[in-house]
Structures are given as C-alpha cells and as structure tokens.
Length: 348
Image (cartoon, rainbow, N blue to C red; front, side, top):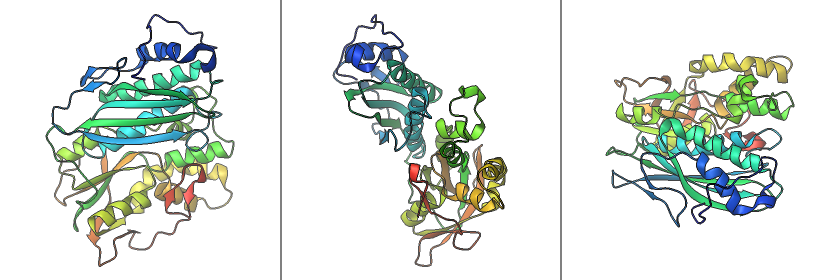
C-alpha cells in the first residue's frame, strides 16, 4: 500500500466491488481508517514508510491468513479478519517482551470482493492496533481468486533484552495470561453449525467471539519482561505444542497442572455438551491443551518472582532428564492431539 498515492477525497460506493473501483480508489478509502502510531515518522503514501527505532534494535515477525484455511468469509466479516490478522502478529511481538510499533499489511483480494469487506478489514486492523499504540504504515494490494492477508509487525524493546523460549530453568514456575480453549470451542461450534457468526458482534456468544476476534492481554508481554520472565511465547498452536517448544529450547521438562485452568473449563462445558452426548470432560481438556489461536502468553518465572497482573501459575519447570518434553500432572497427556492445524483442528 505504500506504492500508491491515492486522492484522500475519493469516494467509493459501499456496495461496489474491488474490480469496479480499482486500486487507487480502494487505497483512498482505507488509508484514512488506518491508525498512526507515535513511532511513525512517515506513514503510507510514499515508496516506503519510516518508523522510529529508539532502541537501535527492532523486533520483527510475520504471519499470513489465507481464506478457507485460516478463516471463512461465510463466518467472518472484514472487521473480524482485520482484527485477527493484527492480533496474531501483535501477540508475537508481545511474547518477546516488546511493545508493538508498526505493521505492514499486504492484501490479496478477488475482483468481486465487496469494497465494504476491505474497509471493514482496515477498521478491524485499526481497532486491534489502537490500544497498544501500533500503526499500519503501508503494504501492498494485489488480486487473486481468494483473500490473503499477510502482516509484518515491528516492535521496540525499550532497552530490555528480548524474552526468548530458551531461558526456562528447573525450579521456575510456568504461568499463563489469557484464555485457553475458547477459540477452539468457538471454531468447533461454527463448524457444527451451532455458532452465532452471523449475529452482530455484541450479540454473539463469548466462544464464537473468541474465535472470530481473539482478545489476548497484549500488555502482559512487557509486564512479564519487567517482572523477570525467563522465557515466553505466544500460545497460537496449542498449549502442549507451544510448551513443548519452550521445553526443547530450554532443555527442560514442563509439567502442567490441568486444574489451574478450571475457570476456562467451566466456560467451555456448555459448548462441549452442545456438541457431544455423554461425558464431555475429555473434549474440554482437549480444547484447553491443544486448542489454538487464543494467543495467550505462556511464560516462566523464577520461583520467587511476583507474577504480573493477569498471569496465573499453571505448572512447573523440571530437569529434562535427557528428554525435553511436556507432561500433564506428572504423566503423558491423555488427549486426542498435540497441536493445532486451523480447520484441521488438533493435529494427530
């Protein structure tokens, strides 16, 4: 989007399609909707943006959303897709203990896509970025047969060391901030035709909303870094899989306490009963342990650390005994899958 210089006075009919109005008019419609952060020195409209990096280093990550793989237009508005695209990238920066500063967004759209979907996507991006002060500073716009949203995010460490996956030590506590299993349950409801995706956002049930617009505690990343977190990551692919990444990077064993997620389990029971007759605890546990895309933060802290607000202890770090791995209540996890594969659900 940095390559064009649209006339901000251009007007686009809300019922028009992308193919009818063209790139210049689309960019003119969405640029005024994008947030401008404090670190932006030169925003969209030139060949490239200029963003301040006071720390002399910057954190960078990238991710992509592909229609019918990561979202479905039958369930998701443009606002939902924009929100999700921003949040999953902002969470990666937060997991390094950094403050998100800017995003670059590349958008690929079919010619018959309503312009209202694109402007909605810009509004969703803006709404997710505004609370953390991040800006959308540019990107690109192209055409294809399906919607693809690619986002690159930058962040500032403000002089701190990054918090990586490799610092967990035996004796540390494992803590989590955010929800567990809500997005997976919302996806399961949508897949089964039991979700309220078509309702206005304010009328959707909480699990559907958690799937369409995950709302992790992004500010908890910097708080964890300031509190001395020894390792941290964004739980995007399921608790077992992502805790396993910390275990391997740190050469430790992580033992999770399933009872520490009792509040999440209570919120998920109703959905499990709606989808399955008979006992539902196994399905609830599967959502908590393997469900992805809640984008909460999993961190380890020294045993004497004071946990920041929003974090709760969910396990302990133990010596690996030569086999870095994750256990649940001291034993191998008894769930159907170990990770997340979007519309494939838990991978097996």
